[in-house]
Each structure stands twice: as structure tokens, then as C-alpha cells.
Image 1 (cartoon, rainbow, N blue to C red):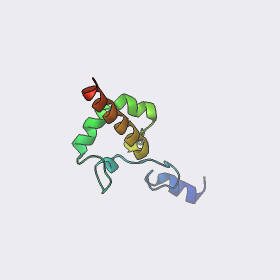
Image 2: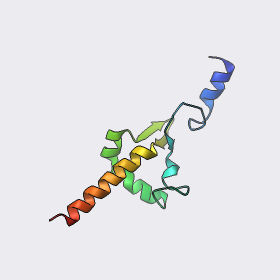
Image 3: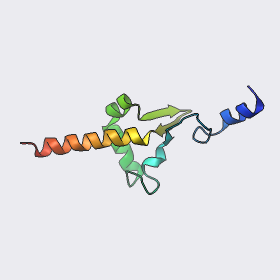
Image 4: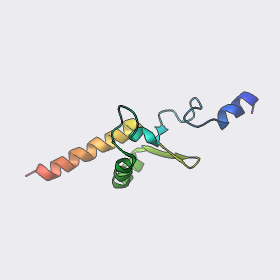
Length: 92
């Protein structure tokens, strides 16, 4: 391993180019303008509730004891669950 590549390997996974392409720190679920949840506790609740579907879709990743999320896959699971819940509630 060269000095440059070892430096890249030691960087935070979200900053090391290409290491975790498509994954964001889990805080992206409640921080920022496009965050789908207003707080960490509501994001935690959703992750517990949707745990099996999120795992099946590969929406979450644990690396170096930190949790990362693929926002596109997370949103797919979230929307699918919301539609299923709405349909179950209002379906005759």
C-alpha cells in the first residue's frame, strides 16, 4: 500500500472517495433540508419499525462501528410502508 492510499484508507469512510459510494452518515436522516425525519428519535423509531425491509433492501450499512444509509433505498422502503399502511387503513 502506498503512502497516499494508506492515508485514504484512514480517512473517514464518508470522505474517502469511492469507499462507500451511495452511503451517507445516518445523521442524513434528520439533518439538512431534505431530511425525511425531524429528529434522531423519530429516525430511530422508523429504523426499528422498518428493520427487516431496510435490511432486505440493503439500505443500511455498519462500518467501523458507524451506521450509514443509502437514502434512495431508505426512501423506497419508507414510501412502500406508508402506502401499505394507508391502503390497509382505508381499504374496504
